[in-house]
Image 1 (cartoon, rainbow, N blue to C red):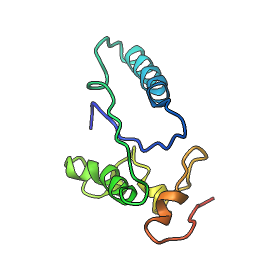
Image 2: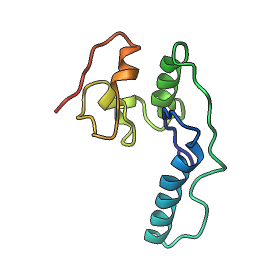
Image 3: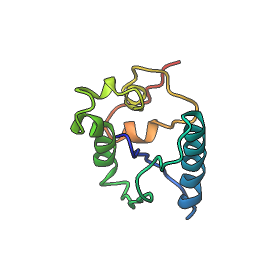
Image 4: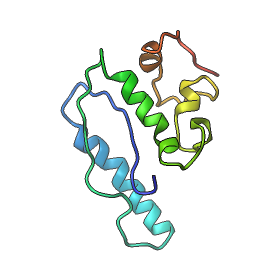
Length: 115
């Protein structure tokens, strides 16, 4: 996944374009300056999919975390350095900005946050 990334965001407001634009543009500018590039860093515009919380959360979480495996970048989700899977699996400390409890609860597990 050298030209895209996946992110699962819940927002109560219709502000997803602005929310995605800021980190994408900021990182692209940083990366291009650091590597003296001028090309596009990410492929195409972002795509948003409306998710029904009662039906699609587990499918979406699986899709995002298994994507590097399906793309044959790694053989196990724990090996992908940019994945949040280790935090969801309780194998790595969960960053303050990452909320895992909602998704984990759909898999039948209680709260699992490492210090």
